[in-house]
Amino acid sequence: MTTKPRYLHTMMRVGDLDRAIKFYTEMFGMHEIRRWDVPEGKFTNSFVGYGPEAEQTVLEFTYNYGVEKYDLGNGFGHLAIGVPDVYATCEKMRAAGVKITREPGPVKHGTTIIAFVEDPDGYKIELVQRG
Image 1 (spheres, helix red, strand yellow):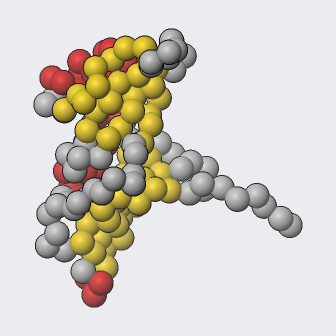
Image 2 (tube, rainbow, N blue to C red):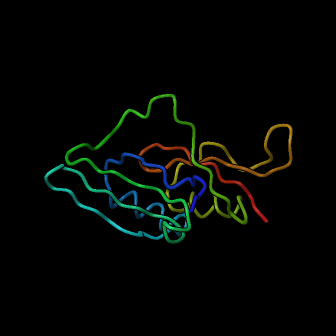
């Protein structure tokens, strides 16, 4: 039996694992799927997403003991999450203290409504209006 390749997860290093999980569960409705602590390796992984890893692409957070901040570099762009109402989502996030880096509105030269926010570790997230 052959199977086609499937995108499994994106790994992001975070400075505070509980803070990252709280942000993605409270702001985007994701759930922590599993957590794996490796004391001998001095790291903990947590996987969050919308459904089982066998069916959905998830985010993997890696917390390396004692590392509170990372240089994000200039190669990574952003994550994109579809939401039903970008304007309402931004207002909810703004009220929770989330940094909005691009206010909601149409994409340049188009009609799709987008916005950009920043997670607590500085990763950019594009909000794309769906539906």
